[in-house]
Amino acid sequence: MAGVRTLEEIFIHAPHAFSVTVFGAEPRGNYDRIMLSPVLAGEKRFADIVTHDRPWYEKKGIELIAGEPVVSIDRTARTVTGAHGTTRPYDVLLIAIGSNPVIIPVPGHDLPGVIAFRDIADVETMLAAAQAGQGDAVVIGGGLLGLEAANGLHRNGMKTTVLHLMPTLMERQLDPVSATMLKSDLEARGLTMITGANTKAIHGTDRVEAVELTDGTVIPASLVVMAVGIRPNTALAKDAGLDCGRGIKVDDGMRTSDPAIYAVGECVEHRGTLFGLVAPLWDMAQVAADRIAGVAETDYIPAVSGTRLKVTGIDMFSVGDFSGEDAIVYCDPARGVHKRLVVRDDRLIGAVLYGDACHSGWYFGLIQDGSDISSLRDALVFGPPVEGQDAIPELVEAL
Image 1 (cartoon, one colour):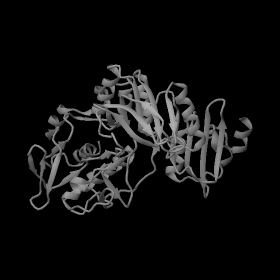
Image 2 (tube, rainbow, N blue to C red):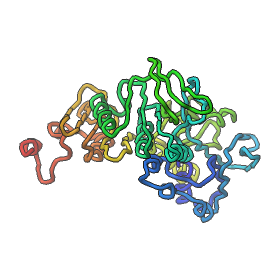
Image 3 (cartoon, helix red, strand yellow):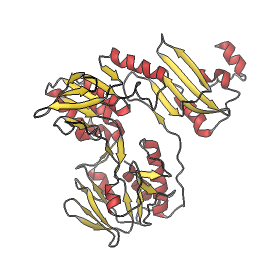
Image 4 (cartoon, rainbow, N blue to C red):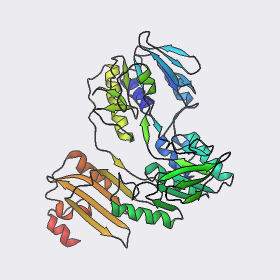
């Protein structure tokens, strides 16, 4: 997604400046990975999430080498070579190879039926398991991806259990109160949620049959989905001698330690930070395109990003730092609504909205702009002021 977005931006500024070749590990065109969860849940088809098909590449005059990941970079000769031996020269190289899913190395992790949730092939594996009547699924990881995978499997008729190591779900995006509400809502749908669950082993002979926890609990499973995190894909860059930390290190212009090579997306490390959400990737693409096309010396400046859970019927939004002590909290358990707004120096710096996220865009804007909210504070939890009302006291009185 990040690599081709960069190409789109380059074509806007310099449509004929480069002869372009794209290597892709997957054997098809580009698709929106963010929308894999709705495909799994049956709310969309794969065709609905395709962003750049082969005709798009042909129209742009791009050579697409699909199904062949690059395995080596020769920085002296300035060539790249794919897994099938295909070699191409470059003047400018853009690395956008994303991340790899973390697979917990417990006994049995390599059994057939143990998969990650990263691409359309994983979705197809999950759908095939559901259609074959393999009724028990275990999802390890109660973060965004894990819960979206669990919801999709459940909607496809599988008895689904979520195992999460931490005491509460989505601890990076939700405070304990909203996480508890989320757990209750998912359990009410028929999913089994086990927090504080530490996986000891995955059992099976020819394929996965069960998951065992460290407390001795054994859960039947014909399918296990690992959704416990990602790691930047750095092997190719390291082998080429590029400077890498946890990710491929880039400067503010998205350039690696080799001035002819740029990198964008989940594979990069910028000023010690890694990235796993789509909004920063689009910003990186813009900067890299400006630099590669030579139209501007743009710098990448990380911006705040918000998070939503793509589970139909669950209304939640999280952004920024929600752990501070100076928090404005509104909670209505009967309606399943919880809001936590964190303020520092008269600025909103974080928000968790659960059960009512209709004003998420407004809160996001306040955080992004660094707006002074001192005059809004008394009614901040109720959303933006009603048009035509000048004073906050009047708004509070009206409510």
